[in-house]
Length: 290
Image (tube, rainbow, N blue to C red; front, side, top):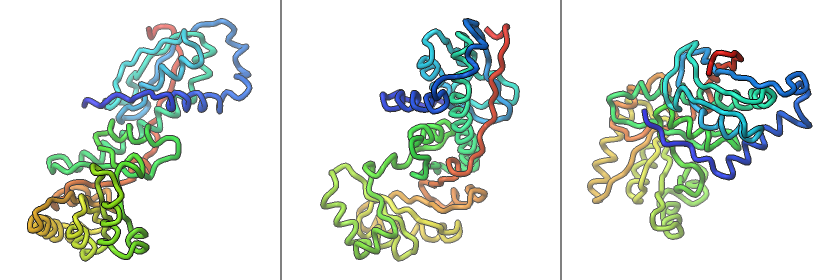
């Protein structure tokens, strides 16, 4: 699976430096044991999954010592098996040791998300329904966690509040209803901006379509309820000479195939980011990898 490469922005590079500094503190007290030694090592997968985070390893170790070289054996988004080599490193041993934990922690976290995403995406195979993430992300890690979702075959929902207007329960209550909330956002938002309404009832969903929302997020509806509601909403949109993207959220992850059969366009879930275990990876030192 081809995954768009991770863009190493100045902000991300600074984050890598900050994360290294968090672990290094005033300096690695074990470094004198290594003196001027050079070393080589290989990352090994200890469980099956989907790898993610390889593109961060080179830039991270370069911050410690530009003499470190990294050779990727697996690309982000590719499946891996226990015992499989993921990447090789070579360079000053002190730098390899100093960056080991930060680099592994990032890759194990991101690979866990990619692996969990891939498992959910597999349930939707053949339905044409896409799996999207949410804004339930770890502060400071949003870009990376959403990248990991893409590596697992999912798509990204809003990166932030400025990507699209999503009107949720509190908006609707404080704005005076669906129509008033949509009208207020339409009057102020830039022309290309999309307006999405989260609906918790059939009445809210129909009101969102009538108000001209670009999308309706149907929250915590059962597959049986969606099978009836989705066609009705599409007919209503057609009667109004429009179209609408219908999205299910608050779903049960073990019933994704049933949700996918309802005619929905998207399913959004925070599960791969909020519930995924890390994919175990180790860094083994040797003299015969490279």
